[in-house]
Image 1 (spheres, rainbow, N blue to C red):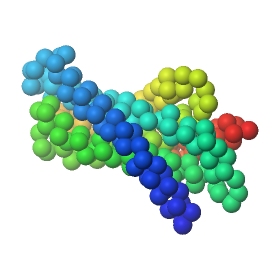
Image 2: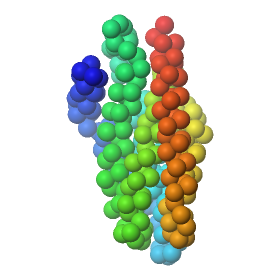
Image 3: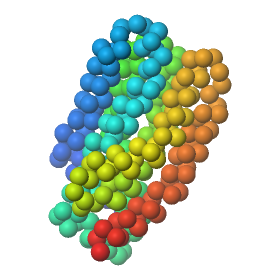
Image 4: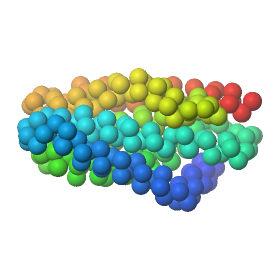
Length: 221
């Protein structure tokens, strides 16, 4: 546990040295959501209807911006080789990296998402569900994003490949996250969508870390 805490503190210190890695996704999310109404028109009902999809897709794309640096900087300076040597457990490193990515990339988006939802005309009664779906779904984005970052480590145009890898894998998370919000707006039960969203997150937690460990071992060999 102490090793995990040291690794997490190291990751957050690295994030603090690169504040642009935090503010760039946050700015992208806010600008994309702000510009979207200009493209589809100012009709309140239409904006309210498309708000779940816009907010979720914006969060997905924003969290992908920092993926190349997730393992890239450590790989370039040789720190990744040291972090993967005994007595360090590679799976612990993978989980800490995913947690640090979530804290620095996804958590700020969760804080501004309710404000952007109000801009789209979403009622205050829907804001808790929006926050809950993002809270349940964004860890899945970080886990799968970590896998993509490990698979594209050292590859030219890795950022583009990250999109190709991540987008198909996070479609279920996107569907169930937006589906819960749409179901609530239609007066339907959201329990099914939330259960499936939790199941997808659990599946990502079980599968993504071992796959990421294998990808990192191949990358450093």
